[in-house]
Image 1: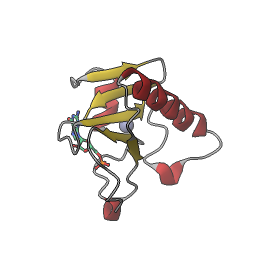
Image 2: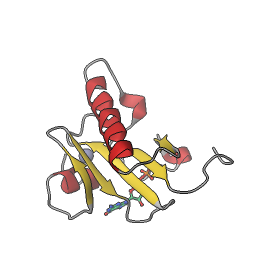
Image 3: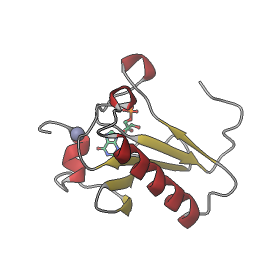
Length: 114
Ligand code: 5GP
Ligand code: ZN
C-alpha cells in the first residue's frame, strides 16, 4: 500500500534492523524499544490495518506471524518469558495502521498489562 510505513519497510524502501524474514513475514527491531528485546512482527502484505480487520481470508497471515514469534523466542532464548502485544486503533496507541505484533522481552513484564 502506498504511504504505509511498514509496507515500505517490507519492500526494503526504508531500512530496518531485521530479526527474521520468510516469504510472508518480516520481523525487525522497534526504533523506540520499550523493553530490552522489542521486535515488530508484520505480514509483508498489507492484509489488515490491525487485529480488528482479521478475517477468514487473512487470518493465516496472523498465524504465520505467530509462527515467526515462536521461532524468534527459540532463537533469542526468551524462555524466561515474553509478551506479544497488538494495538488496534488510536485509543490503544496504534500509530502504524498495518497489522503488527510487538514481541517484548528481557525485563520483568509480569506487573503491568495495561
Ligand atoms: P503501534 O504504535 O502502531 O502499535 O506500533 C508502531 C511501532 O513502530 C512503534 O513502537 C514505533 O516505535 C515503531 N516505529 C515507528 N517508525 C518506525 C521505523 O521507522 N522503524 C522501526 N524499526 N520502528 C518504527
Ligand atoms: Zn502496509
